[in-house]
Image 1 (cartoon, rainbow, N blue to C red):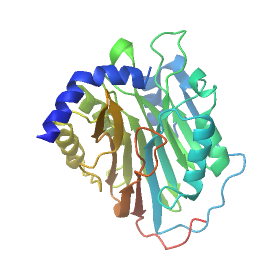
Image 2 (cartoon, helix red, strand yellow):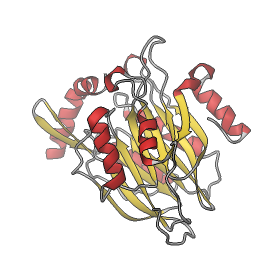
Image 3 (cartoon, helix red, strand yellow):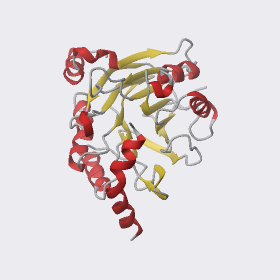
Image 4 (cartoon, rainbow, N blue to C red):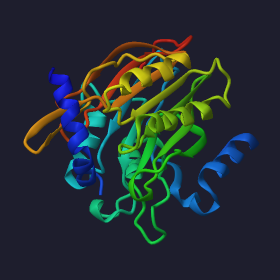
Length: 313
């Protein structure tokens, strides 16, 4: 009964709180052509790939890596500094090998025009990639983007403008990159799906990421993570069906990943996911002690195929 009430409240007031909430380089000809199709020549500035001035030292290939998914909701200033410290030292989300972030600003007034992903990468000594959708109007500020950061090098970076516009011609993107861990190549995607479109159109956005993955070998391990905005009554079932049919599994199911008070009502729903293909998870969790964003970070330690147990430090 409580779940039905929450869904009724969400269906009624979601347009209100969402409006308040949010105002490559390819290594092969095929990847390059797909990148051109998805972003257009005039939007190449909305993809950025780089690395820290001083990279963190990497030891021998590990047997296990930590992966984080977190919608940071355009944090900046002191909150961003606190978040960077957590990414470095926190018992649950600290010292990750791969981070997939959503709502990462660049050149936005609300975040002081900070290049957020570059700042995080420089502070943590990581490789990074960032992508944003085209702005609704030519003279608009850049839209908030998605990012992948890694202690390991990134290649075949691909910006994917997701199908189906949101309100006022708003678009959303995903970002794909190949992460090389020793002799193992992982395909990683950070996704931010639209909130205010019909559920079937949202599933089409997620499927666009799987269509990109289809250009890579079926035996290639893959991670698809991010804010899928799966708040509707049937969203969890349809999301599970889509990824299960593509041979993915997840350690996260119905657990809430988002918390906010709307019109004095506490709302906790599942919006964020981590999906795995060809990888086994050992431990995982949702760090609800971190209240920097209205989302909570998801973390999981993954066993690498044929890895030797060594420290990443």
